[in-house]
Amino acid sequence: MKFLVFLCAFLLAISLVNANHYGCGTSPCGVGRICHTLRGFCSCVEIVHCLDVNLRSNQMAQWRDNSGVLFTQYDITITNYLNVDITQIFIGTDCTLELRDYESLWNVVRLPNGELTLPSYQHSINKDASYTFGFIVRGDRLPNMAILAVTY
Image 1: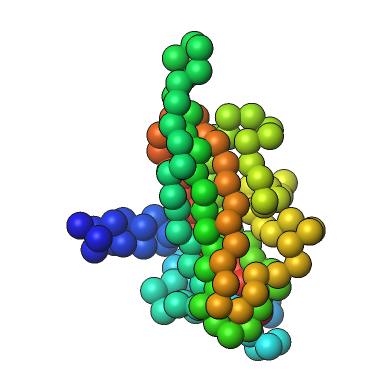
Image 2: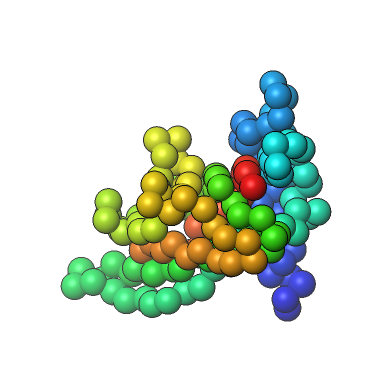
């Protein structure tokens, strides 16, 4: 069962990075790759081989409002497995991130292009540490998300 969940998450991540415009120099990393910059050295790393950082979701609550609309709260944890701080990260999303309202997203910034990144008060994710952000969406479907670029 865990393998099936991993496989689904992997295939979903591949589909999300189709629009990945991050890259090294003038070449975008493209399908199935993360723009990975460590100590000034940039490389396009295949998602399956990028074990330095990951996203983990946790459903925190679920309820219906007075009109019967279903809402679900999720926490997303970014874990940094390297012994170097993450200084920048960009997470791709799509239309499945249907927020309940403008205030239903915390501890992360949603850019005009829909990508998520660290807020200004969170300068980094420390080495061997995690950072959690959350949101409330309509329905019970976990939104599609994939790391597009990470800088250490």
